[in-house]
Figure 1 (cartoon, rainbow, N blue to C red):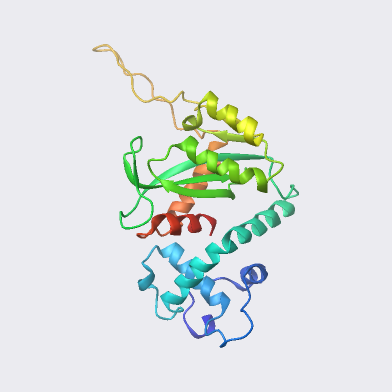
Figure 2 (figure 1 turned 45 degrees about the vertical axis):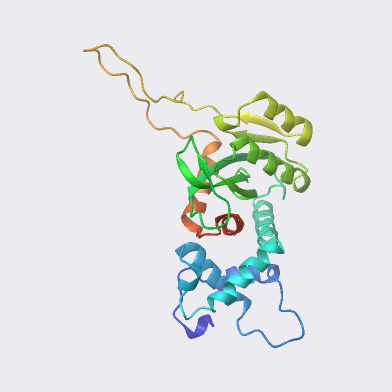
Length: 263
């Protein structure tokens, strides 16, 4: 129990637990009583996600790693993480005076190095990364709407097809998606409009995508544009950064990483 041990910074506060408690599956009737509370299970999962450690390295004053791992997989298979995120996202949007479901979103992907042992694995030639690729569709505040994980060799547009196909049934108001240069292509844009009713807008960089340029000998070098935030796209970049900082990616990368994107 949290009250009998030193509190970790990742432990749920009382107000946080009051919000999450109704969203966590209750203990099933019958059988022997549960040895660990649902709150302590969530505390252990929050620690694992933030620390990025192996399951067996969970502290001994938290529930046994086998128990924590069991609930992690079980709740992921039952869609608990997705339902929990949906409830929290809709709650926040209503508090801000918005419609519970978004009408616009931003899509992006992120290739991450991962172990070759089990799970998905591939090579992203553009990013020079061997591992997995996370595909995210977020609302205009950066909250995840749909997430999926693939081999790093899967293209951005192929991942977006999966995201859009999942989103069309869950978000009836979704009509516009901003994206980066990796989502260009007339065929992809036409498919999105016809199959899902989503218009894809590729957001251009303000600096024109400056990388390098040739100059004459003795001539001054060209001015390098200052860093500027790319409109709309910075929102999903922030979410990807937070996801990479918080999610542990062990050997079974695909299964754990997709669940971590929801959590």
